[in-house]
Length: 471
Image (cartoon, rainbow, N blue to C red; front, side, top):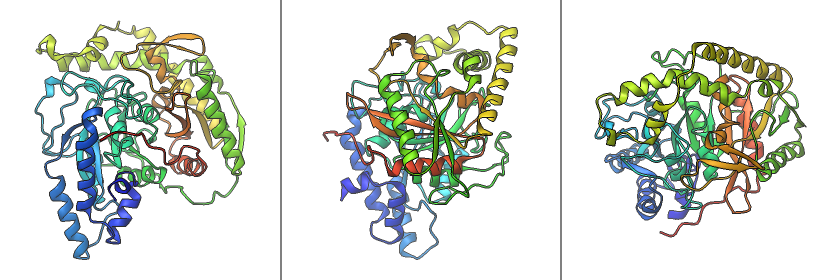
């Protein structure tokens, strides 16, 4: 029963609770035991909520009393350690914030709780949520449950590893350029970065540059992503970017009024990609054609004209460096890890380059707008390679030598433009590592990409695969 519980998705767990087949206490205990058994190898969990079991007992009492139950009633969830949790350590991957306990929940956390979810634990991240590996001076390095010598990614790497390893069914991560979609790809789970502003960033740090930051759900099924997003989305009266009131339905199972038009591409415009990854994207496109969608190979000229990673770098360094400089002011050198030091060492963007990058970002938005005037979704790679070894800063990908920032080549365009994207597994590398694809939609079209993702999930050759871990 324990194995069934730890690898059941959140939707299943909520139904088991609602029908009184399983107690919230049993579910919570199973996940706590799983953490105790496998987290010493992975180091995904940084703090366990002291109230988790008590909250599960209260949830059980509510079921037995016949009270109205939320859609996530009795379901544990985990939260990246940059997201505020009331009374539970939120230390942001840095000794500078050691011992910090917020006095209120982030909006996304409070909405998950309102839906009946129970905070189980906080998960690891890089210092200040800034890097493609989850490693810091305070809580150490997280390992990938598929291969402990490899990274689960960053910045939401602890979250992705915890979910992949059965320590959590559902979680919240944040995304500046790659950080919910990349880690999901490296561990073979599912995640979504919604349209910018769909989910408030209130109670999450850093928020600079706010126009690129997102908070999003991470899970093991598309329907869980849809369920969590439905609870998290909407204005909160505090985050001015979160002002959208566009109606949302989860898209899963509904019949579109016409045949959906899907394009797929792996470049140019994203940087080099490993042939195994490219083959997986094509296989996903072929699978969607087989289930009745109109699918064709496409290109987006705007991505070739303006390399989105370069645009992002010129914009975010200019805005993020002052925030980092203010944060580390007055602190000793041994309290600051390599991520912040690297950021602070980068050359300032000239005003001319900054203005040029702003114009390039507008051209990218226009380019995607043109594309989505003809298509409903776009299938791309998430990462150009499968999960890599720890500490690698340079890669040779399809014969081209690039630095580690190139891993963001296909994800960062969505942060620059604010478009929504889903990361989900559809392949396996020759080394047995997950390969995910990215499903991109037009602004506010989460329903459409969730529908496409659910179709793809139903025919995925990798469904129900889990890492083998000795406990």
